[in-house]
Amino acid sequence: MPSVLLATFKPFNKIAVDGIEKICKDNGLTFDKIEGYKTQEELYAAAESAEACIVRSDKLDEEFFNRAKNLKIVVRAGAGVDTIDLDAASKHHVVVENTPGQNANAVAEMVFGLLIAMKRNHFDATSGREIRGSTLGLYGCGNVSRAMIEVSKGFAMKCYAYDPFLSDEQIKESGAEPLHDLKELFKCDIVSLHVPATPQTVNSINEDLMSLMPKNGVLVDAARHEVVDEDSIISMFQKRPDLGYISDVGFTKMEELKEKIGAYQMKKQLIVTPKKMGAQTLESNINAGLAAAKQIAAYFKDGSAIHQVNGKAF
Image (tube, rainbow, N blue to C red; front, side):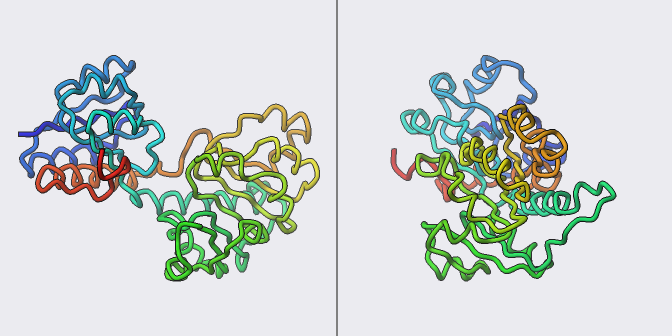
């Protein structure tokens, strides 16, 4: 019976853990778990006998794969795999999958909640603005963006999307109008980023693009902090006190920004969540965990690996 290890320093909700265990047992898989571990060594030791592993944002480096000699598959319960050494996994012939789309609605709802909070001045008893009828520009048109489009219908928004990896037809099917130039996207009232950190996207959202935004425009990053050039945020906020920036991925130059524009103005223009909160819902937690378990069961049943992220061949 193949063995499955649930390894998370940030534990799943108990409902998710119980569901994962049930799926494993129903499919003839043994189940073990290590939750809230304190050191990498604890993780390495726990994985030594595992044939499959479910993780969240846990760090799986080359030493992990060196030690986990029986490992055949890792499933990241979530979308991002930047904490997993994919080259090391491939070298050790380990399939790596993610569970795309399971947290999409959670992220979309969070973005709209933060947008409303910003537009209404954090409900500080002053007069704010509405988002109904605004234009929404989406950089990347994957699962989260499609969820954003669905939510936006309730606000009568017109949606545009720029995604060089999708055809016009695919973008139109998602409910957005396709654009072919990133600069055009920044003419929207709200621009929301949903792209990974790659050599092409790191620091790509800069002052040149932000300067194109209309009055009272808002930039949202719920993807990866590396994509936005923080120096450009500081510069633009000094020039354009009407602009807003919402980040679910941190902001490392908070003190410098505060020094430049003052605490009061910074509160008006900037919202930064205390940690990455997009997927932090009970439903998302359960969905991703159960999807991961089902994907492992499918792999051991017939070799299925439909969400493999480290290539079909090693």
